[in-house]
Image (cartoon, rainbow, N blue to C red; front, side):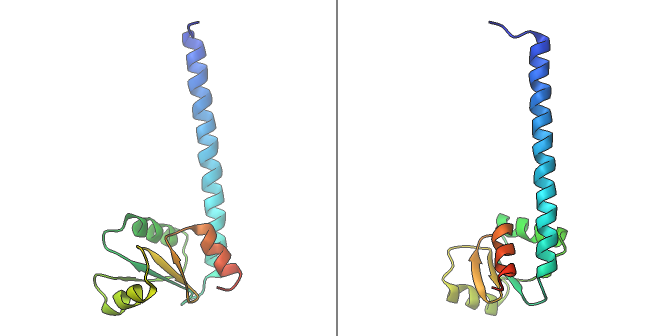
Length: 120
């Protein structure tokens, strides 16, 4: 059975509508989560140990800045203390977010929110 042009157009419009609604929902959730994290984070709570060539580090940095979350960052290639801290953690990669003294490998906004909400 062949689909008519109208049926195909209807299907395309349905897919676009669902995709747009999903994007709206994800953005809305992301904004709310960002506001929560920004309200919980205090200076010194979040330190991001990064690498110059790390795409996830760039995404995390942009997300944190976009949501006005207070954090500090160091680069393992430029800062000997940062590199020593990274090596001492035995981390498998970057970024490492040190949240109130406890390391988290990678960036996950929900995990960050939970750590800040429970105090560490």
